[in-house]
Image 1 (cartoon, rainbow, N blue to C red):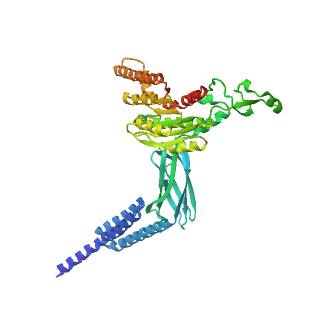
Image 2 (spheres, rainbow, N blue to C red):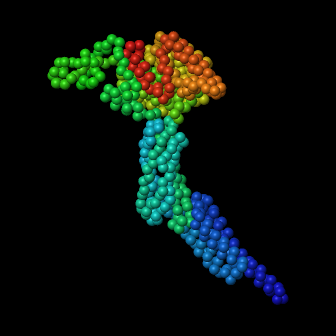
Image 3 (cartoon, one colour):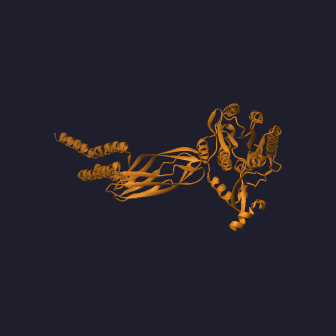
Length: 478
């Protein structure tokens, strides 16, 4: 009988010593579920407290009299964890407001400033971090900001965004993390905040050109002054004399009346038409200095369009690959520049064969007046080179064709490599030289058929292209 009573007492004691473990399970299960649903995660401090409870529970195996103390410890830990959990959940559930200040447009490769304002309308001091959305092909400095918001306070974080690709990009979310008052929990929140950022080609070159043109220093960017054949006789206006003006254009009567050197300015031929055909196919996918050939070509095309519009000409653009992507009819005026930028900023090279037949058929249907047709592309094989030669030469007579062919700098570097004992390098140089000779022959074929050509490296294309346009205007070829 005594043995039975003793066995029952031992069983009750063992069940009593297992209660802390069951209690720990009761603590962990609801908190795990709640933290998963609310995205509130335990911190290392919570692990420290939990380890204290585990050690105390293990001690009851050896010191059964500690069971009451373990109950008190577990209850205190549970109370602290639940209170801390509820505080961070209630404080950050409704009391956080986020605002983003971001320009709608920026230029490729030019840093743009972004501001993110976080408001705390709660009565708690919130500590954590904030990270704004980062679109693909962007880099941010810094990527994350530390956050410390006093009650009813606000903080503004500044960062610089550097776009690495043209196009339209969406910023959709702001990512926040907050520590609970006792640092037992860390809550992650994703707040929806939509903004759109359009990345245009580098427009800084346009303002640089305008500034240098006003001060007659275009030679600094490689644009040369072209001597006109004959003289445009349409008088436009009188203006102050500048250092590079022809002294024969000085109006002596106006100079005597104003007591300041004054020259007569004549307007050039206006209302002529320029149409750009921008190849967006596989020929333009190669990269130079981190940008595709299409990026370089678009920058130069927009620069020439800017110059042509300021010369009084009408400018249009056709973007194509295996289909027609965009067409802007030739028009004049300052607003046309915006249309060209909007049509070209989200065009990207595609790994498809360009359909020159569709592009030139579309051009002949929608542009019947004589125009300067500028095709920007690249030739790397006989198939596409033959198409370029045929279609550009076929429009000669109705239009004035200008072929812009982009060089491969690596090909030229390989051909110029000095010969040495490395046979592989010699074979590589010989192959590159053979391709360049073939390419030179393609350009000569174009010129023999009356097609004007610009052959330049992608990152050095702007100045030769603008010079070619000014030369065409000076010689009255259009």
